[in-house]
Length: 497
Ligand SMILES: NC(=O)c1ccc[n+]([C@@H]2O[C@H](COP(=O)([O-])OP(=O)(O)OC[C@H]3O[C@@H](n4cnc5c(N)ncnc54)[C@H](O)[C@@H]3O)[C@@H](O)[C@H]2O)c1
Ligand SMILES: O=CCCC(=O)O
Image 1 (cartoon, rainbow, N blue to C red):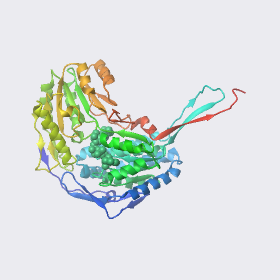
Image 2 (image 1 turned 30 degrees about the vertical axis):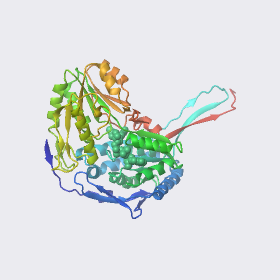
Image 3 (image 1 turned 180 degrees about the vertical axis):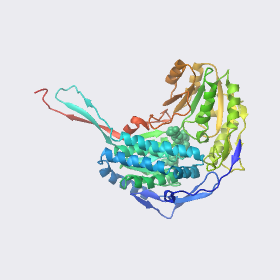
């Protein structure tokens, strides 16, 4: 593994770099209260943004509520045009937007560019879906009634997002909401607010009307702001990506107004490699899946289950590949993998690592802190023959720890895979299509990915079951979550003439 350094960037369009909230089409400085945004790779402060008080969030909600009254009546074609503009603008500004992600999140620039393309694809997808919102005609039992359904926008949507995809987690919610005629109040994570603000700048250029796209900012005030969004009767839906614990808080708070909710929460993805799998393929794919964002994605493999007949060979080959990573500042072109978001991430990796080793796991790649690069740099760890009792079998690490468990039979591995309260993604590798199909059906997850470790795509329904949440984002289904279905009955019609 080699290490790399970087030199400080400048943006092609410095206007994308914003340090204010965005409410009603205006850049808002807030009160005197600020919080700092730091580059996790260097600790250097890169921005100071306003800590909004609850009163300003209420103002943003009022603005979005009032904008909804006209925005919902814009034509689907108009909305489609704004969404398409946004897609084009994101791609035109790809380098700058990716640089902002790398600066605030720490991921390697190549990955950040991939995220911008992925994020923009939701605007393209929903530009195409906006004019295609259908209802149904229904034949009721009463022959004198005629019944049909229409889909209408739910209203103001509160969007709360995490730091791991500062752009894509916002776009896959906001694009669907804006496509159907909802207005949005977006709250990015306080560690990565700059991507959301760059998008607000582009949303204005794309033509979205004032008040339809708002970004609020908070760090210390986050619980209060979250409560205000959840409890406001003017906000009709809260859509959240983040931890299961926070999801539970938001659900409780939203019960006061019985809000519509979509939650994309924690995962604990099993990655199962059967003995007949194409080993090279499984290795390539686990690299892409486990170490995407250095293990900090909700669909990263958290637990590898490798058949007992190949576990040692698999572990050794994986370690050889991981050893070729170039770890460094995400903006250095040589860097393949950046840093993790903060020191808590590293503490969790170390806690899971120590626990697994104490319980008998074998160290295949020691990994560990890379203090010469900075406090948030950590070389990946690979452990094999991890016992089922290890904490990592149950808890999501969300970092660069790759624990490999051994199994013998299909029934046994499905049992292990399902023995968790989470159910987001799962991966299965085998050349036998019967195995792929049977195991996919038996896995208790919202998504199963067979013979590939990379399945995220704007066209697929993305979401979980169990404590990984509910609701689907992306695809034709993603739009439904931002609508309400209305049934219209026309009665007392003659049966015939
Ligand atoms: N299922 C998915 O699609 C998906 C995607 C990304 C991350 N995640 C999950 O998110 C977790 C990692 O992210 P995290 O630890 O930053 O999540 P987190 O829940 O702490 O934070 C997510 C967002 O919620 C906000 N937040 C925190 N407390 C809040 C409160 N009381 N009220 C309102 N908002 C609040 C944060 O400021 C941030 O914007 C992991 O568990 C991961 O699996 C899930
Ligand atoms: O981290 C969660 C989202 C990951 C993805 O969309 O692939």
